[in-house]
Image 1 (cartoon, each protein chain N blue to C red):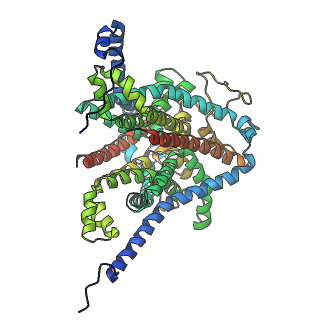
Image 2 (image 1 turned 180 degrees about the horizontal axis):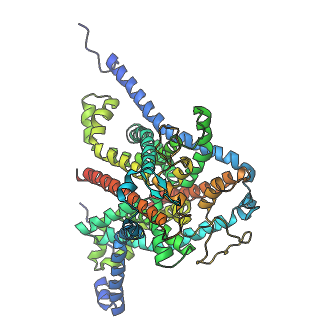
Image 3 (image 1 turned 180 degrees about the vertical axis):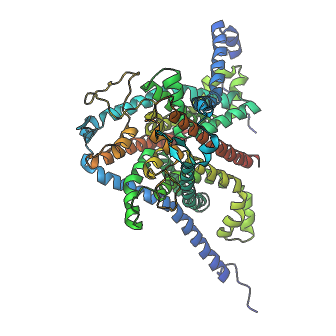
Length: 315
Length: 300
């Protein structure tokens, strides 16, 4: 082997200069490294800070005698501005969030995973690059624009084709959310499929399987954890999405009976009422408590997704 | 008994196999198409409906007649304010956080905790960020409803975007580069400054640009921390707001126009949507193009 070519040193050796570095430079560097460490832990500070501040604003309501946590979680009576009979039950909103998210996942998961399989197994590198760029752009569309699309385009289509009295309902919100979460599912799903070693594919092909069998019998089982993580991240996005569902699901606070009913989600409820709730009032605090609930749900979903992703890496 | 099929003639099984393969490809391909085609149709529809308003005048004019006519200038410039101010907070913190995670952090429980925090920060719903901004910046820090509260909220929200992309580009600098630098006696920070950062600047820049587009599109976090329905400014005024003012934002303007203002001229909300969508996609395309260009120039 040829020895690598070495450039003759043109400057005095660095060691000499290092010894001559001024005190300021040396201590400056120390200070800077501490700043870097501080920025490094900023993410923890912010996550704790978010929880602390949202929880702090919600806390006084928990000590209020008129308020019970079981009623908050399991009652569908939401009369925050009533004079005599104030009720703060978010069950209807939980049902709204659940119905819209489930519908979105039913639509988005097959298409998202199908597209991920197409990207990683079936298409040429050039097509793949183009499609990935399109998916990246799809993911960049602001949620308020999706909401606007739901409010205008989608609601007209729904009224025309289903004969529903209003076009803003679970179906509308579900379709919009599905379109929004597909890019996440595709990109994480594709990563998961990519992580399956090529030797698996080669072994299967050597045994004469079709590519169809390869996908069903080899790749899907092998990439199962990553695909689950992709779906979970989609769910997280669905639960946390605010503007799009605020505009596309209508504003009815009740437990939905059909897919064409209007609902209100937890996120939309906060967004719709926070502006009207005077700071420090019970109503305001209950909205913050809803925030704590949302934070907890997405936190658990994200932790689970991360655990699955970590599972792949370990392999 | 029939003679065994030669390797060069197709057996019935082989034909079936090939057919299945084509079918599978078409099924998965159409699934991929099913998510892209509606997008193109929708964008096309938006542009067609917006066409009567899409003039430069629309961008530069202020909303008139109770927001039912006129343009979007205050909202547009407000969004630029929010984006750049939030960038001023989140870019340095995010980049340094990524430097810490990639260059300093060892693989121990504490740093795994930081990773988890970054992931969770990215997953916190935007409305919860809004609640946090309201509680922390508007009330606790006494910034009031202002551009500064709104952009701090946006900054925290977009921090994970910048951390993730910066980290990725730092990780793509080969370890041998760092080792070479250490071996000539440079300290860790000197290595980062002279070798790692210059070699990953392209990826960092891409991340910053993507952060711009993310921040521009967010609505919920600014809606309760500093953005207002309407604010009177001069037509085409480049510096209409002070940092402690409230401002209009393009994303919130679209929400207001389409849900709260009756009797808006048909094409105006569509045109607002097209301007917002157009700017976001333009910024993203710029980032993608830059990334592709710099990747093609990479020498290792």
